Image 1 (cartoon, rainbow, N blue to C red):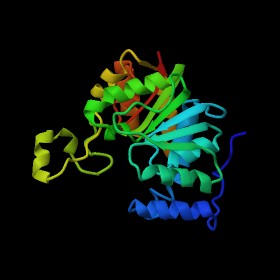
Image 2: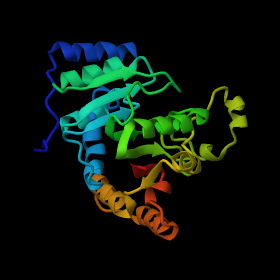
Image 3: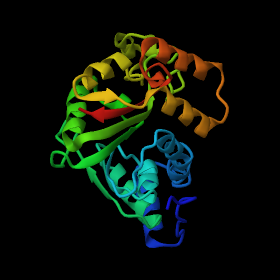
Length: 264
């Protein structure tokens, strides 16, 4: 049975205290929307997206790549997934693990080095979720990362990429900066630090080629937009039209890359 809401949090319990301590150790506010409120946010975003694409997770082995504070991990576990999660930031796994525990949910969260092999055997998972993570992967490591996801997925297993800021967007989705996606990286020296940019869809396509095929189509993408946002406007219809013309999923062209892929 699919739950109607997330399990309640015991705000006085030891797991809540561990969550708060770990969150503060990472320089975050436990009450912030993107910390303590992230699971509720993803309940209203990643959960309807999974439903729109008919991705069932109950009783399945699911890996979340880049679990961050555990927002999506909590949703997956609440929906019945046998969950494992990894992150490259050593501050994140303790937060995500405590987040699961304070909701009374099981899950195994661990640390993995950037560019290191995933600590799982071949064909370990039915589904990998990559939610707002691939745009943070160093370009030189992306192909290796996709190869690792292919390795740990079972034959005909699925990779669901969502919330992934695209290099095609006029406004970078995480920083909110206009046109930064179109600036050469050489200009980062003027800013004194690397500027956040979206993931180029063409780079992702090269890494996926020969490993994954699209199975979501336009139907799932449009259903997800309606489920999350209600009625769809002209931009959404334009991305859907681009997808039809190119015979590709609309999620290739939208500000956030969103794709349901099957392992070949």
